[in-house]
Amino acid sequence: MLNRMTRLAATALVFLLLTLVTSVNSGNWHVGPSLNCADCHLQHSSEDAQPVSGGPFSTLLLKNTVNELCLSCHDGSDPAAPDVLNPVGMYSGESPGESAAGFLDGIGLLNARGHDLAVSAATPLSTFSSARDLHCGHCHNVHGNANYRNLLADPAESGDTIIIEEGIQVFTQVRPDVPPAISASIAAYSRSNVGYKENLTQWCVSCHDRLATNLSASAEAHFMAHPSDVALNSGGLDAHADAQHWVAGTGEGFPSASNPGEGIHRLPHLSPTATDHASATTAAETDRVFCMSCHKAHGGAYQSSLLWPNEEGGSNFIAGCQQCHNQ
Ligand code: HEC
Ligand code: HEC
Ligand code: HEC
Ligand code: HEC
Ligand code: HEC
Ligand code: HEC
Image (cartoon, rainbow, N blue to C red):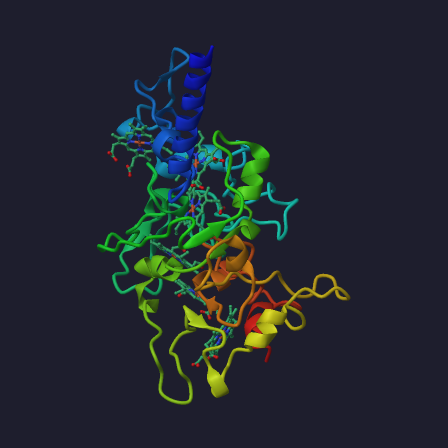
């Protein structure tokens, strides 16, 4: 009896350790033991004794293209898989009602509100601007890696090694369940569950490399493009940003109790001294603006993937700018 208990305990411990090893400092799913080959590959292009229509596909994939394959689960049809295809309803019960990355449009559609999938397009703000037809595997490692959300360490294939590990460069409060569960996925992929510390700007500028440095302009302006990775309180006497307004979180740009619909949820930001989710999401004067303060990584409701209707107009058209600048 004791022997059996010991064995059980040992098995439980090994399981726990495996779970810990795979959940700390790595993507949460499609990685290590959670990389289930059959999710994406089919050995003989035959299912339930029937040949798969249109198959067999290259590298024994279940679908003809990477986008079709990934979206076969990530289009909202699998309620435990984070939905990344417009329209997305799964976060409607969370605040602010969207995921961290936002959403993409269908395959082959031109999308003015985010990254296009499988549309041959030059990379804007890039010096090597060759046309590419974006698919999920240009940004995510399809077989998983040590990065947050399995993000590629070298998305532009230019020799970068960009480390974005969970618990180090990015902090989340809730991890998705392994195996997946609907409510855990909703909580884990919700925008409010993520706080950022560093290296995200480097990741975006691996492809959009013209923004790799904050090129300075001649006086009186300081920069030739909106700076990234610069602190709210870095301006000194000549400051353009209003760090105290940002920390207070009320007034211009922020939601107003007396005026529902006015203002927007506090924008994402880098917290250079963060050690956990709480410190990464608590506002401080040393917070830094970065690409994802203004843009959703996949795309969203507004032109240029922006987090507020900068080009559409309406009462919130400068809400994002005002949170930091309060002009
Ligand atoms: C069979 C269904 C299925 C397919 C096919 C699939 N996924 Fe997923 N994916 C899931 C589920 C379910 C989760 C959530 C896992 C969890 O909650 O633990 C997930 C999670 C993810 C995550 C988040 C991982 C993390 O570490 O937080 C990424 C990124 C992702 N998938 C990308 C992809 C890409 C890219 C493809 C295509 C190459 C793909 N998925 C194909 C079901 C699928
Ligand atoms: C989430 C989806 C997904 C899962 C799960 C997955 N693969 Fe793949 N795999 C892909 C995609 C997509 C490609 C094609 C990559 C390309 O063409 O860019 C691929 C390609 C491959 C290739 C050929 C090219 C290469 O990259 O080496 C092998 C071999 C392979 N997979 C093995 C596996 C094995 C073994 C497993 C399980 C341990 C697995 N895959 C699980 C999506 C997946
Ligand atoms: C241009 C790069 C890029 C492309 C293309 C891309 N992703 Fe992402 N994806 C990201 C980034 C960056 C994040 C993390 C954003 C964050 O957490 O702030 C992310 C997050 C995710 C997540 C976590 C859930 C969420 O909404 O935050 C899933 C799942 C995912 N991507 C799947 C996919 C699938 C499936 C495709 C293809 C249909 C795809 N991605 C295409 C960059 C990309
Ligand atoms: C998340 C915070 C944040 C957001 C959002 C933001 N900014 Fe900034 N902005 C900064 C910081 C930080 C600086 C650099 C510090 C400084 O100049 O005080 C800056 C600098 C500037 C500058 C001065 C550039 C120079 O040459 O010195 C201008 C102009 C500017 N921002 C305009 C905007 C506009 C317009 C928007 C909205 C489309 C916007 N900002 C949104 C934080 C932000
Ligand atoms: C302060 C807000 C802000 C920040 C920070 C910011 N952007 Fe933008 N970005 C915008 C706005 C607004 C537009 C659209 C209108 C414009 O260009 O003024 C835009 C447009 C773009 C475009 C489209 C350009 C085109 O020619 O179509 C790309 C690509 C882009 N940004 C990438 C990035 C990357 C990468 C970063 C981080 C290095 C970044 N942005 C940081 C506000 C911002
Ligand atoms: C693998 C290369 C790659 C990476 C990494 C990448 N992009 Fe892009 N991006 C592109 C390409 C290609 C386009 C042009 C086609 C399109 O719109 O999808 C583009 C277009 C854009 C646009 C203009 C699209 C629009 O809404 O009109 C913005 C904004 C943008 N990217 C921001 C970002 C941000 C922010 C990140 C980091 C989270 C990022 N990109 C990471 C390749 C990339």
